Image (cartoon, rainbow, N blue to C red; front, side):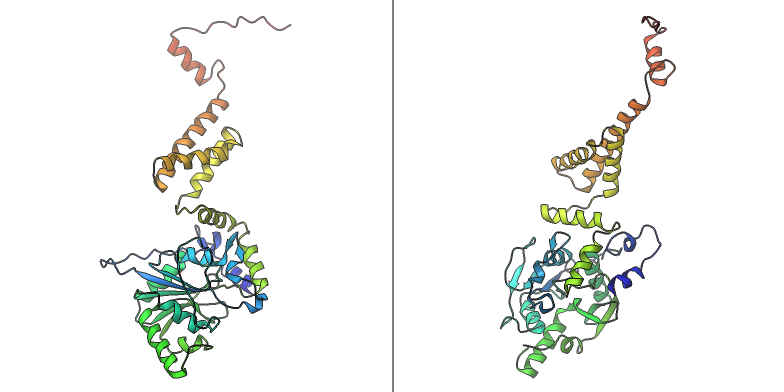
Length: 342
């Protein structure tokens, strides 16, 4: 059902991230004059039992070579503080750790434990099984929350169901309702999330992709298959490599691909990867960012084109190269002294 929902939402505009990657093209939030206006925290719930996966370590399952938890942490990297509610493990980002008491007491108890480690006015609340969540979606949730008077903004799935663990909330509203539920029931253990969301004034945004979560092995297989589709694989691979290498650099991949093409066609095929490596190294030596990469790529592309031009313009009588050399020498060319064949 998820794949059908995705296909039905393809569009024909160019360029369009909906057709090319798993991300949505959104306008980045521009904070107003208050420097604290964009500050938010994140709480990631990663301690579920994963019964539908046979008790597997769901946050550690890999999609596109990266654990699901690390994919979610990359999406909420803009948070001032990120609290993961689960047992400690190795992650690509530094985070704070918390645990509900007792462990396994359910999502509301876990959310309460994570919220205690946050201080910002806004908090992004996420599950650890969202393979297609990205920073753009997180920004979109926060922007929508700040522009309304509601207490939270959450995504809905293709069936229109609320996804309260892909959401941004006002921290004060969460604390108020969690305290009320705890007082009413004596404990938050075992209470479902709908007891919380039902008491909040919420805005809903439909997004069948970012809301997709991995509850079953079929979901994991579908996620792994999708990122290997032609329209997604390159962006997924680049994101995975950047996470693995611990770098955060946005570059114009089109420029680098064009450079690789020119080097391969104009010089030799092995020149493509070597040239792009050297461009990256030159940018690093210059201690630059995307601009340094673009400038190094421009120079290398120009060199590859000059190299190819020499190969296609043979230095024979009557060609531009020979005529130029003759005119600069001030005289006629010497006759060919080689004996005639035969």
